[in-house]
Image (tube, rainbow over the protein chains, first blue to last red):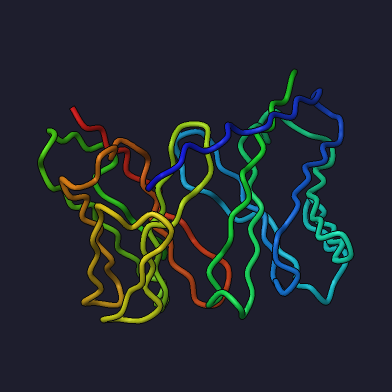
Length: 113
Length: 110
């Protein structure tokens, strides 16, 4: 049957500060990781991804760090803006699960002006 | 424009009725997915299809059914057996790993 999930953790930052959103993943065999941003009432949008042969990848104002030793993934947003307010999800996948994405719980980011 | 469309955006249903949510993609993706999202929570996989005429149950398939007769289309039927169907439903497609999402359908049971 269905289970009631936990409510999302919230991170609150000041506009202009850097944000760090963390994610612990479950499967040591996962080889691809991805971050999505979901604004209220909309579908998730791709932000950045990283494969397991890398430790760090940078995009525009965003950086993803991967620590395979402790199975930890983080998303850093530089100079956070009000438009960054959203829920951020990490997801992992690998050959062992038919390449389905395994989704994290999500973190709600609130940017204070 | 390439992308995924879902219709309708808002859907109301009476208890005991089946309802079908539409999902269409023109990205030429082989794989398609249906997720359910409840307020303040994450995504839960209902069904997925990795190729035409084939689909598998996800984590919460009970009370739902799907078909995949065409590569472009993956409709989801919410049946009367689904005891708590009010939720936000998201469809996605992928070619390799990254999933592209539609705008979602918000289903409310009256």
